[in-house]
Length: 176
Image (cartoon, rainbow, N blue to C red; front, side):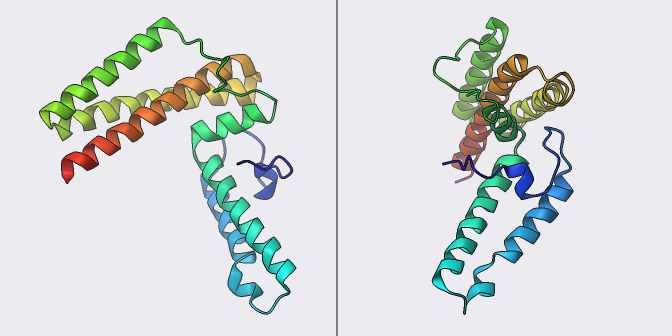
């Protein structure tokens, strides 16, 4: 659930751009959380407690979105009326689809072989790919303002995040 009334960048008083200073984001998040902590509103009227709780919840959501490059890019596109993962927006380059299939097969093979080393290797490759896509999104969103191309790159990044989460889950299963 996303609030459309409060801009996440404005909430933390940071520039509305893809390439952001994570240290400033973290610092401003902590300040917002501290200012709206329930302990500060113990003797306040119920309405003030509710507002503080809502702001603290919004700050958690906003921080979660802005600290993740994939979520941040998706959010920035949404601010321009673009749903990067809309069901009508499913086109992906054939080369990327083939790469996805290869990663999935390698993950499945590593899972069957119970090879955490292989899973770590795949995760490392995905991290390199993520870094390339993040740099590309900085260029497309902050410099060129090319939302169409940024949407395609965001879709790739969201997919890679999902694959990384799947790898983490498989490693967790193998560790048990």
